[in-house]
Length: 179
Image 1 (spheres, rainbow, N blue to C red):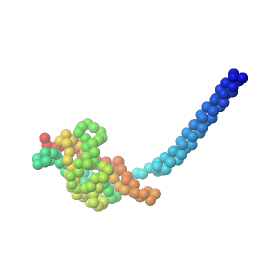
Image 2 (image 1 turned 120 degrees about the vertical axis):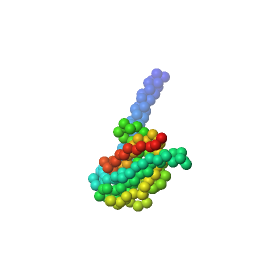
Image 3 (image 1 turned 60 degrees about the vertical axis):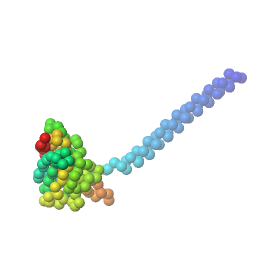
Image 4 (image 1 turned 45 degrees about the vertical axis):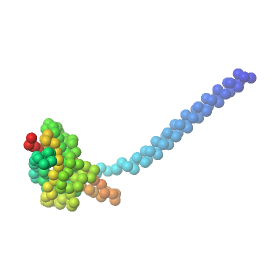
């Protein structure tokens, strides 16, 4: 009798383990489907691109040594030479003259000439075509070799205002700082 009860108990245990695995796999599949549907709403359906006529021109760049602060200052003059309004720009620098892309974000080193929010430098008003931006001044390293300026615009898509990076309109300028 004892052997028969042990055998019956082992058979029931095997069934309950199988039911546990089936439930675990079912719950995992349901959760995966829910997460997929939720994440799908965050991915844009169409890519947001900058119009071809957006362009910005570095009219002048100079690096001076500020002896009172003991730092180097970069003075930057920008002009909108495109066909559309420009809302702001990303600015990056590089201390390596051979680098293909500037990697140092210097927007947080802005001294004057705009406002910074989330790495974007914005003017108080949009820069209309043909308009010169107020001169901006940044604190930079004396080792800076070049800067890159990438214009940005804001577009309304599906009743939401979206920031659009105009990477194709990026401009690069060499910088020479006195030692």
